[in-house]
Image (cartoon, rainbow, N blue to C red):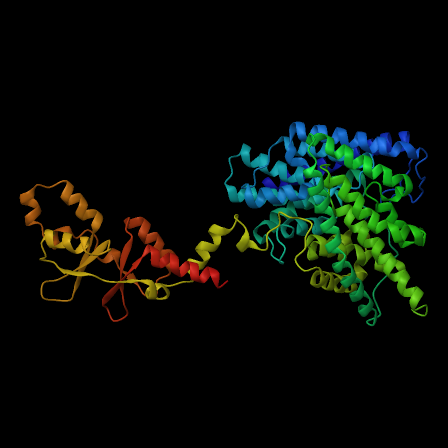
Length: 571
């Protein structure tokens, strides 16, 4: 039920954000600058007009940055930057908690940033809308932390699946973007799929069902070309390094500027505006330029500059403290790099006559997968956004070689390597590890059992405890080796505190036995069960019943922790 609600709000939120974005673009870009951006096939036409009032570009971008900075740093500073990272951070490090105002401010600030010409994407704000509502639902219904985290993931996937019209890819993005090493939140997949389908249905019903990009349906049919696609993958993976370094280098530079934070996005916007006077193609999300690249509608000069200008423009827009996502600009960079790559191949080897469109499509998939470490989501989302299902095989080649050549670099700095590295799952792994360890694994770290006869007087028992570090002693029958039970140091203390001198001298070991068979642990018993026994009996040591029926050692809490630590290090 909760994932359904998250999907509904994500779909409605995507519609609201899209409407606000169109309104902001119309006001800032069209009416003031006279700039008509081309639209991809599923969202409009390729008709475009370059800015008519170029000198106003820095002013408009500066104003947009100032307004965005005001809303961000006055009401919700955590909405700065690309919102997906904030949602990832909430999942791992904040128990899924996101303030209710975050989605509202993120939506408003991102619409202003992008609408005024900032180079940013739609996935960041919509991810925070969905994730924020998932957290809000958890507050209302007082849901446990694990459910809150699931709804945050469902919100990320639902929002992205809605606004990108990619329900399956959006859901995969939600469960995959949390980690860098091909780990996913499997328990969140079904709720995320449900939410993504609902959100997509709502958004599609009112916005249309076409994929964002129009393609010709080109299908892969030349195995030899896999070598060429693999080369593109290597190129994209290597170019992930300068992009991420530039992105966070610009952020660190702006952090070092000693002025109020709300003015920094204005400075970033103004600098971008100066650059855009000479190269306006780097403004906005840029999907229309990808569509033009597919059909050969961009000059070689523009194509040669666009991907690198887009890297810098995105860094200035977001890393300065502005608000928006990085998915859109990243696939624009990847798509145009793919176009450049195939043009270079056709120039060097004219007999190849390679079509541009498929290299643009797989370039989009390969670059976002390399930069964000989302290979499954990068593949499926690109296929859903373009309808290019016939390119799955070459896209896989590009993605695989892109991941290999990009190493561990990622644009999402709040990602962790895998579940083992996430505070959200550390408790799960403790339980999993202990369930797979037995008492026999802990025996090398266990202590030798200390025995007393059941007729041993209390003063002698007290001397045994004072002369050792033991917390329990085992009691055997008179003249036999038969186990009778245990005496704990805690129980001895209780007797001493609540007895007189005469009673103290008359107490024997037999009188102090508090635990018998229930204290025994078997060699094949798993350590999770032993830990529960420690807690239930309020003891720090338990005698081990060996396979021959004898008790020779006692397992301690410390021995259990050492066994766990060694197993954890071996993972």
